[in-house]
Structure formats: structure tokens, C-alpha cells
Image (cartoon, rainbow, N blue to C red; front, side, top):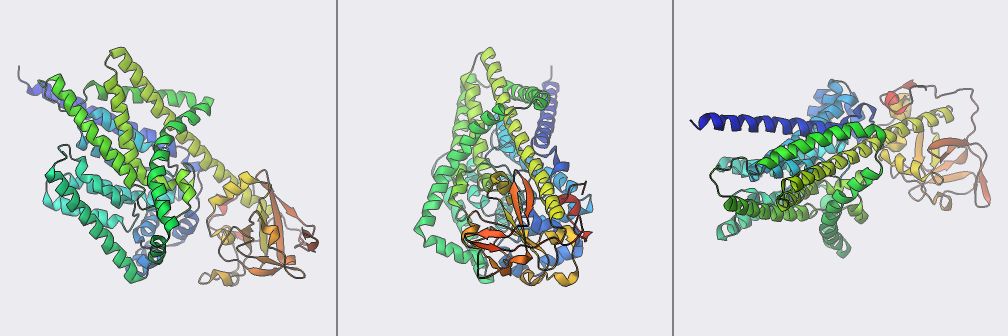
Amino acid sequence: MSKYPLNLKVLNRQQAFNGFVFLLLALIIWVAYFQNFQQFSIYREDFTRVPLMMQWKWTQVWQYWLPIFEVIAVEEGRPLHTGLIYVFARLGVQFGGLPAMYVIAYFVYLVHVLLFHRLMQRTTQNAFFALTSALAFALFPANTNHAWLTSAFGILPASILFLVASHLYLSDDRRNRIFSYLLIFISLFCYEKFLPLFWIAPLLKPTWKWNGRSRQELFRHAAILIALMLVVLLLRTLVGESRIGRLIQINDDKNSVLQVLLSITAGPVVSIAAFIMKPIQAFMALEVQWIIPLSLLLLAIAYGLHFSGLNHQTKRPPTEEASKHFQRQFSSLWRLLITGFVALVLAYVLTLTGDEDNIYLVNGRASLVHLAAAFGAAILCGCACCAIQFAVSHSRKKSIATVGLALFFTLLIASGFRVQQEFVAIAQYQRTFWTDIAQLCPDMTTRSIILIDFNQDPVGLERVQSFNSRFPRLLSLIYKFPLSWLNDEDPNLSIQPKAYRLDDDWQEYIALKDDFLQINREVALDRRELPGEVRSDRVIFLRSHEERLSRQFEPLVVGDRTFPLKQNQTQLKEPPFRPNLLFDLLMSPSN
């Protein structure tokens, strides 16, 4: 009998399995991070760019790119970071507003994961490794910003460029190899941390071995990457990019050098530990309504692991001896283990700025420091899963191991449920917060200053961090104030009502002479548009307790001094202004 029908049958089965993996990954990403997207809000840096795209037309988006050198300087050398956020956000506005933006973010993340999965298929023909590493990559637990628009639109494109460049590098075509360097060079104008990762591209070759030729390729490859980095640094210096000066200061600062050393040692440990701690935390916090969907996903993942494990090497010749097959698998696994470890360390090489404690955080915006580590950590996780599979030869033990691994990935999905819950909870808090301000401050008017004390509400203080540095002027995005109150060119000169979050030790610095208070960096958490010296009778003072606000009308007591506060002399129940861009998003429907 001819072998061709059999080969065709195997090929069809493999194509069907690839389709199953595609649908599985698409479903897992949606369920873990995006299924509640209609209840999401915007967070932190989103407040700077998303409202702007709600106002801009496409012509204004294209005009943003025209003075490219100015954009490089203003955007700290990352014109693609902000520019792509503008493009994707404007596309979302075009097709349905904020919900459409999250749908676009989902597809960006899906493409990102599928590119990784295909790359793992190319670097080894072990289907089990490709699936488990892709699952680990999609559900990477040390970073919880998967659905954050700023990350999806402004940072993931750099990872996509890195993955496409890696695909091209594996090609034998010289032109593709050159194009791979062009793509990784472009990624530097979006997010720099993926450049060091590209050094491991030669190790992704299935035929890679440590010899003189491979060492020469690695050195040549490293020299090209260093040259690309120097070109970017030179360009940024010429256009006057501000971070270059800070980078020079960092290089002269021994503490900053120690911070880099801390990042490349502690960072990998934290990333790997998250694969252990997050499933445990998710198991301890399981909710009843999660049981059925998680059970179905567990079965789907177990089926995928079982099918991929039936034949470790999807294109293995049928006559290959078992011992040679095992030797090849072991050699490939060892190569991938080295690749994953090196990539994990390189992911933290450019951690030059930011709070040094961020490296220990695996939740919230600060966990973004681990984003680039997903590549190496996922490869190591895939290696660990393969090692478990190789260790169990008995069919019953293999089935138990398969179910155990499926449960592990299912708990990572449950961890994603918790991330979504936090996204929704913050969105609900935002609406409650601004609704309280509207109801408590209907008398806000020109030059009104709203101060908010969180000393009795640590949870509220944490969640109010979901607003970025534009917080003082957010009221102008909720209400349409008279144009004469606004000054977009110099916000410090605008006389609209402004709100400020007080620092925990504000009482030590706020008092001035007579009936004057000072609002500066010692008093407020906000760092922009601080009014300085203000009359206390212009101040509306709010206190936060158990995530709700209340207004104080009695004089503010600071030490042995008292300061009269603004009184509500109107009969209004809410501010007398028309709704603006973010009114529906940030105000409760009942208001």
C-alpha cells in the first residue's frame, strides 16, 4: 500500500490539532483576561491618551508623526509607543468606543501569543513543548497588565516585532536576516527591553550546537545589536531626548548600577516564583461560579497536552530508533533550557530606572517590569513540563502528570480571573469616587480647590492610583467648563476646579500664614499643576473612608490653628455643567 494516504492522514490530523491549539489559546486569553471587557474603564496613562483620541480626527493622528524628531525628543525616544497607542485607540473610537479598544487589545495579545507558539514549533518539533510554553507565555503570571490598553497598544507591538524578527532570523535567506535586524531596530522606538532578548535568536535554531562557528555567529550578532543600540542612543542625543541625561547620571551612580545587578538577579527569581505562588493563591481564592468554566478548560487543556504528548516530535521518521529519538529530545531540551535562562536574565538588563522595589511586585502597573521576562520564563516552564513528561514512562503516571499540568495551567487562568476582578473593581471605584465628588461638591466653580484625604482609607488610596498625573484636571474631562476657565497650552494658568490627592503627612506642611494653605509636593501626591498658596475658603475638603467620600464644612484644624473652608451656599445637588467625554465612563448611571 502506498505511504502517501497515510502521510496525508497524519498531515490532516496535525493541521486539525494546530487549529485546536489556535482555538484553545484564543479562548484561554479571552476568558482569562478579556471576558469582562465591557465593565473595564481606562487606567493610569490611558487618561492622557484615550480621551485625546476621542477628540482627534485621523488627520490629526497622522499630523502627530510629521515632526518626527520632535516626537522622538518629547516621547523619550519612543515615538512608536505613543503613536501606536494613538492609532489603535482612534481605531477603537471609530468602531465602537472603549469596548472596541479592548477587543482590539485582545487581538493584539492573541497575535503576540500565536507568534510565540509558532516560533516554539520552529525551534523544536516537540509539539508538547510548543503547547506548554505557549500556555505559559499566554498566562505569564508575573505581569498583570495583559488587558491594559497602554501595554497592549504601546508595548506589545515591540514584543511582536521581536518575535517576527526571530522568525526571520531562523530563515536561511540573507534578506530575511537583514530584515530581522531592521525590525528589532524599529522596536527600540517602541520599547527597548526586547533588544537584549534578540541576542538569543541564534540559539533558537534547531541545529544550533556550541562550536567555533556558532560562537563566531553569536559574537557577530552581539556586535550588530550593540551597534544598533549605539545608533539609537546617538539619535536620541542629537534630538535632545531627556532620558539620555538621566542615563548618564545612572551610569555615574553606584546605587543605580546596583539596581541593575539586583534586577538581573532578583527579577528571574520573582518571575519563576510567580508560576508557583499565583496558582496557589488562585486555588485559595476559587469562587463557585468559576468551577464549571474552569473544569471545561481543564478538560480542553488536558486533551491538548495528551494529544501533543502522543508524538513528541511531530515529524519523526517512523523508523527512528527510540534511543536516538530520546537523545535528540534531550539535546533539544538542554538547548532550550539554556536559551530560556539566558533570555530570562537578558529581560532585566535594561531595567535602569524606576523604583527598585518594583522588581519584587507581580501585581498592578509596577509588574510591567517583568513583561519582557515572559519569553524566557515561558521557555523554562515548557522545559519543566517536558522534563515531567519524560520522567513518567508508565501510561497511568503519564495520565496523572497530564491532568496535573492541565490543573496547573487552569489555576493560572483562575489567577487571570482575579486580575479581571481587580480591573472591574477599580472601574466601579472610579465611578463611585467621581459620583461622590459631584454630589458633595455641586458648588465647585472657578479656582475651586478640592483636597482629598486618604489617611483613613488605605484601600481607597491604592485604587485612586488608577488615575495618572492628569488627575487634577480630570474634572474638565467629566464636565464641560466654560472655555475661559481652560488653558490647554499652559494648564497651570487654567482656573477650572481642580482636585488633589493629599499625601499621608500633609498636615505637617499645609499650613501657612493667616487663612492661607499651601498645596505643593510635600502636601499632595500629585506632581503637576500644583497651585501653591491658596486661600482656605476656596478649598473643598473631602475625607475618604471605606472607599466613600464625605465633605468637611467645619474649619480645618492643623495643630493649634484653624482654617475656614469653602461653604456650600447653593441649592444645587450636582455641578451645573454639561457632560463631557468621560462623564458616562466615570459617573454612576444613577447620577
